[in-house]
Image (cartoon, rainbow, N blue to C red; front, side, top):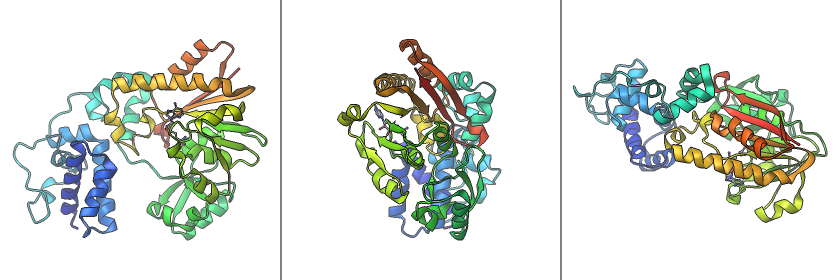
Length: 385
Ligand SMILES: C[S@@+](CC[C@H](N)C(=O)[O-])C[C@H]1O[C@@H](n2cnc3c(N)ncnc32)[C@H](O)[C@@H]1O
């Protein structure tokens, strides 16, 4: 496909997304209908689409319309490309740019920085001086991070194995197990290092959240919101730690046993009615459902789907999960609360609410990992009696 044909494909996919289709579904639907496209074409089109969803507001302003065409026109202008080189009207290329398809000045800072208008005051209050640089970082692609699975290999062995797969990495400062892929990212999931369980795909801040838990041999820990099990697996890589996993939606943990097997570790899945009978636990991790604002680079549609009502609803869910798990923690144990959110209403304010309602508990650790420091945005607090 020509570069212009890739732009035309992105326009069609973006129009589907703007009509309400989920991003992945729109991309796979297009790929299924377009067997002529090679893997490089698909990857380039995917990048166009994700870039445009990340920068939906600013590209629409630069492109003059909230349409697939407007977004791609805005994308080319933002990148300093000459739109006429792509919008040529040639076969498979978009039609030529019309006189009324002009760029306009940004109406607000939120528009310029691709944050929903209603959220900007909360974003600014939460991040202070880092609000603008964080919003800019969220407009860009996320790096690919790997976790070295210490249950299978040390860092040197994993790096050597990745190199023989054609993947170059550098250590990431957020955590001793974290590597950042500098080339060959698309080879990771088909490589030997991954197949043999030496590495897992996991953001460095997610790894750092687990590294800060102070896991020691003999501990029994519960991952209460285990989902796909990224953190449960990272905890299970610690020798002598017994990991239990639970999720309100157990189907989300479906792949966890296979992933644990590949990693040479073990995680015991608990159905909701089994949790209390296995408690209390030395550590309960609540990796809570949240806005996902810290990972909007990877899942940018979440940025536009969030509403004030949903944010309020999430706070209620976060509070009720914390209340529910507090009795599952041993007297000397730790309740670790984590979110991949940058917003104070999901982080500090939830901790303050918990401490206000639960006499005798204190917060002995609190940290926000910042997107501007090269990881997803993540928050963690350790609550003890
Ligand atoms: C942020 S995700 C977890 C990600 C996962 N820990 C990881 O590292 O891959 C939050 C999870 O919480 C689950 N969840 C939502 N409400 C819950 C509840 N009331 N109790 C337990 N889990 C819940 C969701 O199904 C979702 O899988």
